[in-house]
Length: 361
Image (cartoon, rainbow, N blue to C red; front, side, top):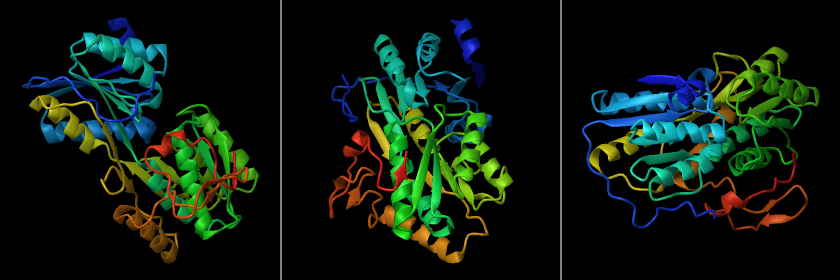
């Protein structure tokens, strides 16, 4: 396995619906696949990037090191830098390239057009091409589970959501968390702060401190590291939730549970399909039911009735009896967005640019 950073990589060298495309190329079988993984941070962030790298390692174990060789490029910023990295990886003869951040999309689409024989996979993306697939996880389902815990445990009735960027995935997470909390406490308030980064421990910690000073006693996050949880531990508030991986080692008292991303099933399937010559462009969006979103162990301090309520939401999502975005839903401007008996479906998710009533963003 090669591990290179962005600098070394550079030294070496109209929106379509997220649906499978007709007429995708047929690729030949291979004895060994050369796969690349482009990360926006590093695997030691103990969150998003860690989860993707763990998925890569589990994929190698499942398929066999004799059949797959991997390259990992770390700290690749979204934008022009990523385009150069994707192009260089394609020129190096990689058969399949995984871009693991939303902001890589334009670069991947451009490079994919230039290298039609290379397969590209865009995590959390929304556009496909004949040789580019998209894959995502239903993180918002996990947000509904932890929102249930927040609504029942918060003493002030004020929770916080530290976001990276106001993109659809993050907005969905905020609303899912908040709506679930309001089912348990109709007056629950969620204060949102964006730090304009996926991983900036200093900004995340500062945001957590400012929010706690405003009466927040429970924090969730859509950023990659444990900094907010560490502040929660220091300040002695009720707690918060890990993002992407179990972060309890960093805040054993404050860490209530975590939304854990399990990427290995998709990586195994994608790489195996390249080996078999059956790879096709398409889209994948699994969640709790598919095992790509997992709720971590519950902190022992969570009351048993809260755990039971959280588990009921989780099982309801899995069996289809509970939907995080079932109406009625009113936004924070007072407009009815989802009527009684209706839900926000998979297509409508990506156009939601509003926050639910009670969200302060």
